[in-house]
Image (cartoon, rainbow over all chains, first blue to last red; front, side, top):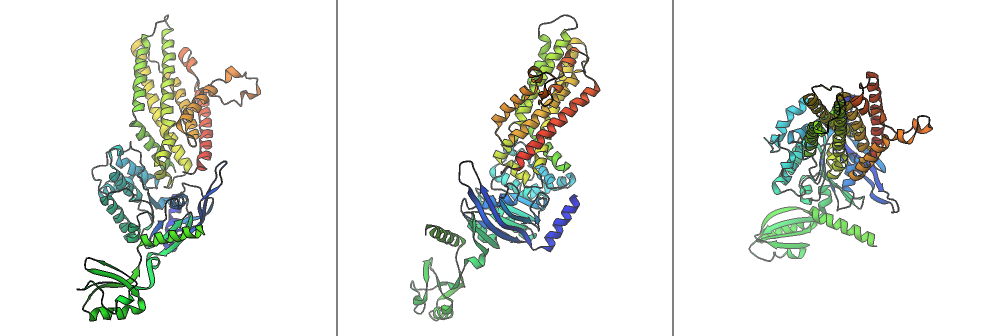
Amino acid sequence: METSSQTTVAEAASEDATAIRIEGARKTYASLGQPHRDAVREVTFQVRSGEVHGLLGPNGAGKTTTLKMLLGLVRPTSGVFEILGVPAGPAVRAKVGFLAEQPYFSPLLTAAQTLALHGRLSGMSRAAVGARVDELLSRVGLAGKGDVVLAKFSRGMLQRLGIATAIVHQPYVVVLDEPASGLDPVGQRDVRNLMLELRESGATVLLSSHQLSEVEAVCDRVTILDRGRVAAAGRIDELLNIAGQTSFRVSGDDDMLPEGVRERVVDVAFSGGTHMFSVADSDARRVFDALDDAGWRVLSVSPKRETLEDYFARLLDSSYEEVGE
Amino acid sequence: MTGRVWALAASVFLDALRRKVVWVVVLFAAVMAAAIPALPSYGFGVVEAVYREVALALTYLATMVLTLSLAANRIPAEIERRTVYGVLVRSVRRWEYLLGTWLGIFVTVGAAVFAFTVVDVVVGWLAYGELMFRLAEGTFAILLEAGVVAAFCVAVSSVIGPVVVVVSALAFVFLAHTRSQLLVPEDILWRLYPSLDALNIINPVAHGGGVSVGYIFSMLLVFVGWTGILLLVSTALFSRRDL
């Protein structure tokens, strides 16, 4: 039985390029005497195999509820949830790793016992878990801490253990819910390294995060939720590039940009002897030549791109304006 | 499936071994058992029976305190601390989680009841020069009842907090031992009444010749039936719960 379900998962992973499929997800909470409240409304998105996919949104957008429905912690009102091409039930969850915002472990178990428990619950044999515990603890910087009870662990140590439990069974898909929230810079670096390692190993990562710089650095694609709906989705490059504009970083002897450039710039900023500005794509060649003629140094030329923070804020502002209207 | 249930049970057992309440209850019961021979003495032949009765009553009390302290708050605490997330996002069905939790509590209580039995027998031997192995029949019945109470706690605590669980468990135990006070065997409700009287064998163990092997099997049937029904109820309740 176990072998059969594992084979099915492996076949699904190799044949289907979609690692996670969520279609028409809806969760409605009903309380006695209270109006029904939709936490998630018709959310649909897919995560391709081998990509790092960001799930973004402000508080209350429905990110955690969506992840909980995917992982079987919350019963969906409706919708289709698939992992590796099969319905997201307990059998396929043996191939899924999960790292939560808070490290949720029994404080009375040791690190080794906790790792062994999570390995066994993911279908690993006792021998396989035993062989992996020391290696994993070393990998996450907890070598020699296997016999220490978790009540004595710091927040950072618990999060490192969380990383170890998320990958103890070498999952195909890893779901990370605000994994770096509240961590110090070293802990944040560890989480980022984990994501990069997972991507290199071919695993699929679904990352829910508030830390937009982290998302921008590691994610291939994002889905942005707002008030329970998908507000935007796509490749980060496509979402953030501003069509028709080119950005310049230049430096020169003068505080003023040379003639032939000044009148064409859309916006400009000056800092530390460097000017940053953007122009229409059609003016880019003429601006470059004008800078060259004036003896200025062109440090970089690239398609104009918003930061994810700016894009996110603009998207939510426009969404609230629509509601206001 | 079996591996996951045993892995969960082992984690509950290991967790319980580090809980102070377990050791406090075991030590308290051992000290009290050692003090029983200091009770006022009765006539020849009766004093041993009184010892057996008090020892079993004490074992019952200590076992129930231990069972309630382990079972009433286990699931609510796991939900509140969200340790349950790490378990249920694995390939663990909810009934496996409940069964593994119950099994871990039952094994822990079983180890404590074994320790109580050893203390009771040793103290009886030292005080009266008699190895009262028959006490094991009584403590086995107590363990079975503790298993049913643990299953009740698991069922109720899958939807409600620990205070309500303790109160309802005490009410359950009280009601389950009052059938003969409320009804007579000729009543229609006699067979439908939720009774655990079959597990109360203190009298034949303390004052008589114990119970037969056949009766022990009937106790096991009562235990399996009650525990099975309660764990099915807990699965039905917990499966519908959003975490």
